[in-house]
Amino acid sequence: MTQAEFTATGSVVAEVKGRSLWSDALRRFRRNKAAMASLVLFIIIALTCFLAPHLGLREREFIDYSRILSPPDWANGWYFGGDANGRDLFVRTLYGGQISLTVGFVATFVSLIIGVSWGATAGFLGGRIDGLMMRIVDILYSLPFIFFVIMLTLIWGRNILLMYAAIGAVSWLDMARIVRGQTLSIKRKEFIEAAHASGVSSARIIFKHIIPNCIGPVAVYVTMTVPSVILTESFISYLGMGVQEPNSSWGTLVGDGKDVMEQLPYAVLGPGGVLAVTLLCLNFIGDGLRDALDPKDR
Amino acid sequence: MLRYIMRRLGGAIPTLLIIITFSFFMIRLAPGGPFARERKVPPEVEAALERAYHMDEPLVQQFGRYLWGLAHGDFGPSFKYKDYTVADLIAQGFPISLQLGLMAIVLALVVGMSLGILAAFRQNSAVDYTATGISMIGLAVPNFVVAPVLTLVFGLILKWLPVGGWGHPSNYVLPVIALSLAQIAIIARLTRASMIEVLNTNFVRTARAKGLPERITIIRHTLRPALLPVISYLGPGIAGIITGSVVIEQIFGIPGIGRYFVQGSLNRDYTMVMGVTIFYGVLIIFCNLVADIIYGLLDPKIRYD
Image 1 (cartoon, rainbow over the protein chains, first blue to last red):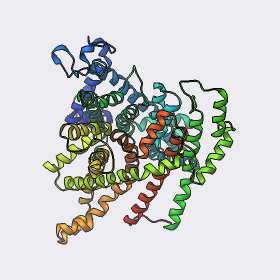
Image 2 (image 1 turned 135 degrees about the vertical axis):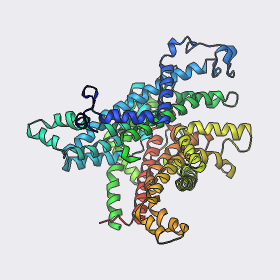
Image 3 (image 1 turned 60 degrees about the horizontal axis):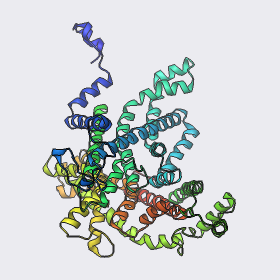
Image 4 (image 1 turned 180 degrees about the vertical axis):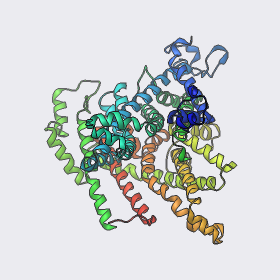
């Protein structure tokens, strides 16, 4: 339904707005109950984690020796109980969430930048350069990545910024492939030809015309990358090679909790459960976004 | 076919070289050598150690030495397990890791495909929802959470199964389930989607229209095309199992190479970490190649020339 049709049938012209791909997608997304519920839950989890210092909870390093390995006590605000050092496990889970979520988004952003530029350039230039660039992606694809990330963190110390960069730098491959595919189909469209004809430079065509037109599939893929990055980070932290004391991420908390699991199952179930719920929400949001942006896929 | 295999093997060589070069130089650039201890060692001892491990040579020469050794199946000595070479440790641990991995991949294929197929045939039924539920859980709950929870429930509370060790069949149950859960989830999702797609194709409609019994339609006409995506997932799936086994071996105290890798990383056992990474790299490349060949054999649309 276009604007022209509306005006032709004589409906109220002033109130008519064109329906873009995005408003259509938004409408479809809103109708998807699982995705909407996940989105709300995810926002609540994220807000609670990042606002933890302002919620009147205990300090992260507050220690109460009488609470060592104590079970949850809701009446006194020990929602997950105390850990092996008598710290509030719930508060530690929230602070851990800050790190896990930040890693998830920062590393995804890194992978987005590299993947989109790489894929768009390869697809746009085509020919031998494309072949070479995608061959590099193929080679990188078959590397055992987690091992390289562990090696990187092992070598450069457990610097959290480096971890963001390392995970981001190894998760851009799918993004590059998707963007390249999109670029190949977009670059044959008339508006690109028009841009060429009016003398726009290649770099400008890539960044002004091609990349903005890839946003749909890229957005879907971004929401799929965030949970996988969070998972990678917690995996590494779980093994004791990622985030270190006094900082903690969900992975380190589960790792610590595993050692005292026999006395205090909540030490694993608390942070592990929050991690699982977050990943579940992100997966549902990703699915919902894909259905909303790509209706022919239903 | 043979030419295709040869070409793929040729293509694997640069990948391998990249893995080796990258790990070698990354490890050698690391601050804090393998002999860094809390107590200061006399400089002459340190020099002797460095000489014994050829660490005093120029980097390029060390790299050449390492490559030459690799070509002869020699990964160098382990820096921490003094009397062993890395090759010894890999040879010791690999059969165990392989056993664990094979059981996990077989379980994942059998359960994942059955769930996917059942869910596709009974869309929106209880079976379908169960299968979808299992795959959502498998996707969202990481194996390092599943494994402790399984140990807690079946090992510590119910006391049905041992929580660690290796050798007796009762040791296999928990690690194999924990390792395969994520893969079951992915394979079930893949199978369900492709099965539904194939069931709507014209050739299945034709088979049904000409009156073939449903059983024959499924076995002869549906399964083969529907399972192709699962075959092409085998490569990444095996890579996922290998990565997961690092954590699983650690949790259940299984003496495979994954555990050596973790120990090596925590101890800065350079040659160990490098050796295992290269070994896994070769293994993953090999598995991808095998998966591609099987795919080619099953998909008549693919021609190799």
